[in-house]
Length: 624
Figure 1 (cartoon, rainbow, N blue to C red):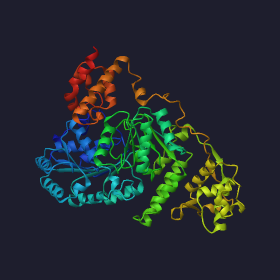
Figure 2 (cartoon, helix red, strand yellow; figure 1 turned 90 degrees about the horizontal axis):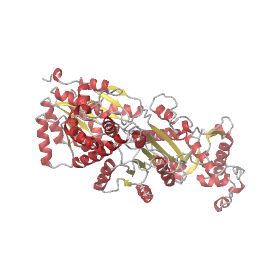
Figure 3 (cartoon, helix red, strand yellow; figure 1 turned 135 degrees about the vertical axis):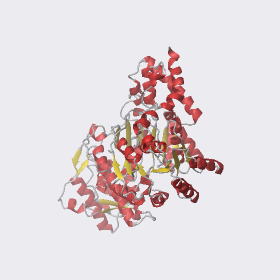
Figure 4 (cartoon, rainbow, N blue to C red; figure 1 turned 30 degrees about the vertical axis):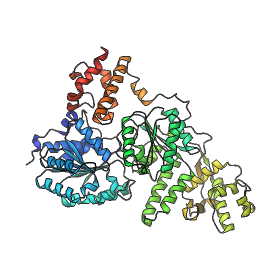
């Protein structure tokens, strides 16, 4: 029988294996609960240390005789790097996936039955195969099935942003092995998605651990879209030259165009999307993880499980589908806790495109479409909000907060103007055009009428005779687009994708037309504030972090990084899996002369001290 009294404590494992002195936030409460055999649902932001919440219980429970922890992970690349990181820390771990031969899988299964592994990673598709079910059954009969950890658990929900139908089969874990504890983890889930996760995974009795969704090191900025590629170039060159980043675009074609434009401007950039050969995608993902200063331009096919700690910016050139997607994607930046930018360009066409994708989806039920419209409306509210971005973002996840002082709206408060008269003109024009012609028209035509432009289309339909013709000549087309976009966001106007993106009034417009309510809108900025610094004037985050080091420490740090790169190449792992930058900086600053000097540095556990301590001392001693 397992004897928990013989196992080391979770805090011992944290220090000895992973090299950290203390748990962060709710980690210890989660770990203690799961070690005791409790079910748990964990919502913790990216970079908050979710992996330790199941890795440490896995080690403690295995040493107490409970057997292996099975981790359900959605991506092969993620499994490879996590298993590699565990090996570096001295933990016995492996993965079962389609890259292995039948012979390799067979040898691994024998290791499992001999209780030689602490963690086994497998994809959800694998869990539901007859062979895997049989293996799990054999482990269970021997008392060697310790824990199930379901990573990226939001994938089980149809309301989530990364829905994967194969996750639905994971309900069999509770049905088949009701006595084996389970921990489900995700970085992003609103109340609806969270409830769906609980029901689908049969976690009604699980203890919920919900951390703050706040990522205080991320600065949120949303700018008016004019020329998105040019704006992106200016942003990177002025704010993040030479630093790693991710750029999200909606289409594959756009990904290729933007990656080419960045490369032409001398920026190390690659394209990534589902249309590329799988081997090429893997090669580019590996380069992004292993090389410094690389920018990945991608569709949302890229990103889940990306553990690269020093991503300094995440840019969106097209609006995501919902706040969960936006939060998840921006959360891939700044995992090391250092300052990071979440930057997005946003315009009227983004609203039109996202509405059209929802409304024209043949596979979705009307209920699903209604929920997705609500999620999009929440994102539009965030984009148009004049309050602190962080307050608005956290409010969506049910969390109250105070203005952060570190977003565009806090740093450069937007000017708000009384747009009641402009809104009435726009809404009246939509109404008069439909009344006169019996049909609706699109945004461009409506603005031509408002601004008194005698185009061929205006003359053809006699819209120059309307009472609204020319009444908006005092505003520019850019200003009118801003008014229209915000009226759409406020639910007064809708774009009809089934009728060539024509504009239609919604019930909430009536109160404005009758003069019963006023309309306050963001003023269109005359110029873009983001990216206005001169090229090269910003000190990089890396430079700021290293500014405190003296000349000798900087030389040691450079040699340590070169040594780490060689080790990472030999082990076919990203450099940060060997040692994080923060660990190398601490080593360089301490200038160790013996192994005892390395003890206590965050990120150096017993196995890494044994494996690399001598080499680290040799590299540091080169200047003496």
